Image (cartoon, rainbow, N blue to C red; front, side, top):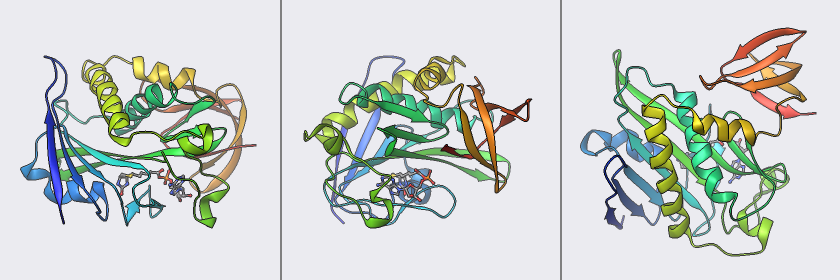
Length: 253
Ligand code: BT5
């Protein structure tokens, strides 16, 4: 498999990214899972075509050749037990900042999606690797539909791309660099335990203050979304009882 490496360095306090690009790969998250031990923080695996992209649980992330931005970032957070929900929201804010300058009606759907006109344009998968009790690394995988003009039937009604939303083509490398610049800024906030990226999610979530259907432990409930908390959890009102949930599937009524 051919690949090439670009390295660019940033100012003090910002991340160094080393970008390794594959023409084709099964999953950029799986590559980092397999090879992280030889790679530094800030290594980014990006591909022109991901053939076995993964979503959460056993779900798939579908890609089409040369159209989309599909990448994973390797992190070694120097804090005990980093909160993965917060890291996912940090990545959501990093992508949101860039996409919202390119298209209208962009929203962040807690815990890991970005939507345009209520259709999914980006999904984020954050994974951690432990050896015993010791955290070895965190991998943040990001899939963004950029220039795709159509989608497979199973997701056609629920997916969109920057191209479909704007009728413009976008340069994938330029988008990647802009997202990494934002990521570096928000990651610094994360490490300093500041929450500006949660504010980005809070301000741009379409659900806060509304009634939604939520799947909690496989039970479908109708609840009111109150807030996204600084710890990354969702605060809901369930039968007038406030309740914090760690992750769940949200469906707008
Ligand atoms: C996600 O899971 O949305 C996380 C997707 C993460 C993908 C990235 S790409 C780089 C890295 N390498 C990987 O192998 N994965 C990461 P979840 O919330 O579970 O949503 C998955 C669901 O999104 C699927 O079941 C489909 O319904 C839908 N879906 C799949 N492909 C899509 C696409 N291209 N656009 C919009 N929706 C899609």
